[in-house]
Image 1: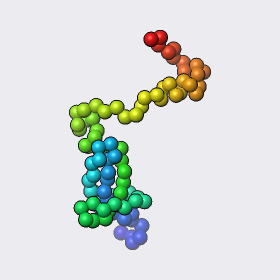
Image 2: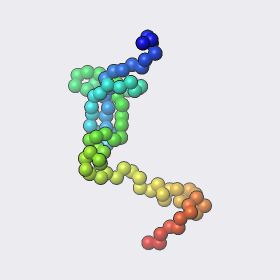
Image 3: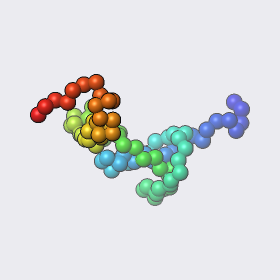
Image 4: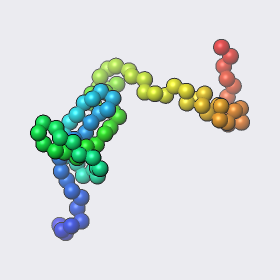
Length: 89
């Protein structure tokens, strides 16, 4: 193998922000932040979903801030952008 062409493979701390779950694994991902965990300093990667928060693994369905997207689209583009009719409620 050539020297100097391979990424830095090291221990990294992943932090699931949705359920405050942290785990350490090895990765080559580039990070800007560092964090101290259990007395050791690690590069920090913030994630939204992990096995501790994903519905497939937990068996619980969580709604992730999707409310208002369709309404925001309709306000921005009106009837021009949508080919479907709004259901009368």
